[in-house]
Length: 194
Image (cartoon, rainbow, N blue to C red; front, top):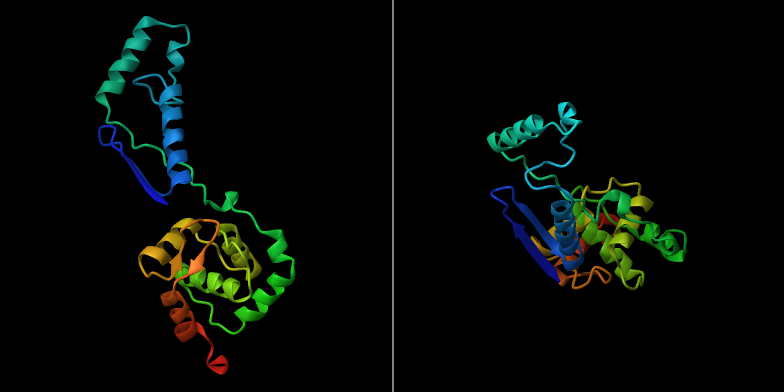
């Protein structure tokens, strides 16, 4: 289920959209940042002149914080960043991985990540992979030594929302929509395999 979070702390704004787990993690990180940083002080902000607890230095810091524009909030960590995705070893080193590589030779590998994601899900569905997850798609990128998108989940969301090629009712059970099947079968299949 997709969720959306919009926080506007006097135009600082944080916007998160995606699976409920991701949005809740962004919200929790935001709450933790608020809880652990003193009011009116940017975290990591220190005044070397004020090490002794000098009252004048503290007052000067408060005045300078009031006169400056609030800085833009730091981007929250993304659960689909490359470092958090994992190769599905049963798929990559097993029989299905070999069948996946053999099947991909029948198709042109597209340049757009939306089409790549759709092609990968389509092929995995054809060879009988059950419960196709984001990590399975990531594994396909690795098997073909293709560059992974910065935000793989967003590429899947775009393939779903912009083109209706992928259905992701659950991030653990990706499927292709019939429009995605048609795109692969008509646009990506090599001429000698038609």
